[in-house]
Each structure stands twice: as C-alpha cells, then as structure tokens.
Length: 448
Picture (spheres, one colour):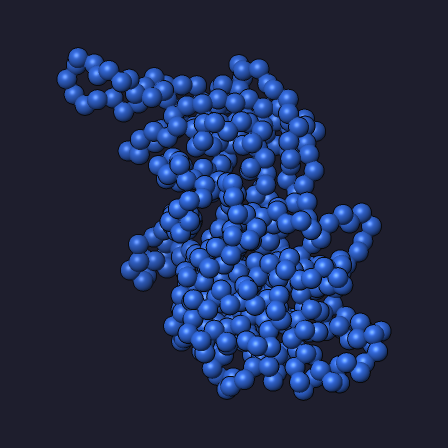
C-alpha cells in the first residue's frame, strides 16, 4: 500500500475491515486496475493493464471474487460511512433506489433470468433481456464541483425471478422487499441519521410505505401514488356499543383523482428532472392508505400538472405528513440522478462486461462495479485542485463536471502518481517532455 497515492489512502485503508490483509492488497490492485482499464472489466483484462503492479500469481486475483472470504455488507457499510462522514455530516440524508438489468451471456450463470429492460422499453413496446436484475440503493450527495446531486451506489441486491426461486427452493422476494431490506440495513448501521428515500413507482408499495411509517423517526418514503388509491379516515377512538371487533378504518375518503376534480390548484416553481426548474400546478391532500389485511398508513399525496405540457400528470405521496408539496415533488425529481448513474456505468465502467458465472463471483463482481462508481467520484473530490481537477471534456453549453471528467481525471492521476511513480517507470517518465507526457496520458486515458 506504500505506492498508493496519498489522496487515495484514507478511503482505501477504510476497506481493510472487510478483508484479510493479503486479500485487501489484491482487492485494491483490482480496484485501481479497473479504473485504468478500458473495455471489459474482467480480472484478466485488469491484470493485463496493471501488469507488474500486481505482485503474486495471477490466479490469486481471480480467487478474490470467487473463493476468498470477505464481507460485501461490511464493505458497503464502510463506503456509506465514509460518504456520510466526509460529505453529509449533518442533516437529513437523501437516498434513492431503483433496479437495472445487467445482460449476461452463458447458460449456467447463477441467478440469471429473463427480465423486462426498462431502458429499452417504451409505452408501446416491451424489451426483455437475459441476465441479472440488480436492486440498487444510492446516497444523493452534493459536491462543490457540481450543481446537481450525484447518486453514489452503496448497497446492491440481486433480484431472483419467481421461476428461479421455485426451481432452487428459495422464498421469492420482490424488488420492493429487497429494497426494504437494504433500507433496514442502512437505518440500523447509522442509528443517529434521518433518511429520506425516493423510489420510482415499483417502490411505492403499501408494504414499503408501512415500513417507512413504522420507522418514521428515521425514514421517510416518497414515491409515485395511485390515482384510485383507497383512502380512509382513521378509525374512531371511541368503540361503538355493538358487539364485535373494533373498527380498523374510518369513513371512506375521496380518492386522489376524485379530490383533484373539486380542489383548487396552486402554482409552484420546482426543481425538475435532470436539473433546471419547471412551473407546475399542484393539488394536495391527506388520508390513510388502506390495503386489505395490511391496515392503514397515513400519507400526504400530491397531484402534479406540468404547465409546459411536456410531462404527463402524476401523483406522488410521502409518509411524512409535514412535507410540503414543493418538497415532495423536488425530492422525487431528485431521484433522476440514479438514472444518470446507471447510464454512465454502462458507458464508462463496463457494467455488462463481467464474465463470472458461479455464485460468489456473480454476487461480488457487479456490486463491486457499482461501488467503483462511488469510489471514482470520491477520489475525484479528493484529488488536489491543480492541474488534475480541470474538466477533461468540453462542449458548447457545458456548465458543470460530469462523470466522464471524473473518471478521465482519476485515470490520468493514477497513471502519473501510481503507475509511472514506481521505481521501474519513474526515471524514464520524468525524462519525457511535457507535451509528450500529455499526449501519452491522453492515449492511456481518453477523454470519452
């Protein structure tokens, strides 16, 4: 670890708690090598990139994912703790979650199934892909070099289809149930923090809402809502004189779509998807969301009408009755950063290029790539300002740093301060002229 650049040591040393020292050294080499590698993120390709910087037999690096004993949960907790301590030290923590499909070839791949691909599907066409569906929980962080929030993955779970679970004798868990487990882990790890979770429609379930309300001192849920949701008043406190069970709900309330027809609308200017602002009209109401056999969950719902006419009408809800309509809308639209993260992981980190097929490798390879996204952004934020923090890519109208800037900068920084700083390379590299060094780094770490 003595050859690792000093700016990277605080983060990489934190990961030691999840490994033995020999495995930790190899994991760090694979992690930094994966940043430098272009193309497929296979262990063989990574070793080809780092070459002599990977001491020991190559098979020992292949075994890091397939056979070595280390805890991905402890690694996730360490990464989340580092992000919160360094970048969100106080106040509520905004998190968002979603799922994405990772295509994987091969007949005997663990956990593989046919899933709907939301990226390639439209309202009139549904695309399916064979591979893995990953349920991802991210922390939303505001960095000084950007105006938008960045979604940093910290917890990842593999969704297994009903057919796969039935074949292997496992109880089936929906993506919403997996997300509940990830949120439960997060609030258990950080008992003094308050989390605000934003999830798409698939995570706006009654079960997850009930979980959020049960832990309302620690967790708030914001998601899409149903226009025809069953809303009721709370049950009367005084029990009637008739025999029988006490009432579980009060009188029936108007559904959100019925309430919108009669209520006046309020105009607001809110932060919108992908940055910028938007003028909208809103209608808000409260009620207790009822599901048979599951009971009541107090919610505040909001109807949103886009005044520009480019976005369809939507309904949102939250388990925190004190949130204003503006806060609810902006919390939900802020989750769009996770879609950007998924797109950039495919473009720059080779999310769909892993080739492991046994259980351990599958459950470690892709989640490690999700964590790698967070590590790259954190390293970019820690690198000294000049000259490495200059934007690597320019285009007309560009106003802030992007992940392409981050990974290009971190790559060039690692080539200079890690690879070329070793004794066998330092003397030769130092003799090169500055223009030739820039040309060499551009070739090794292209700006796209």
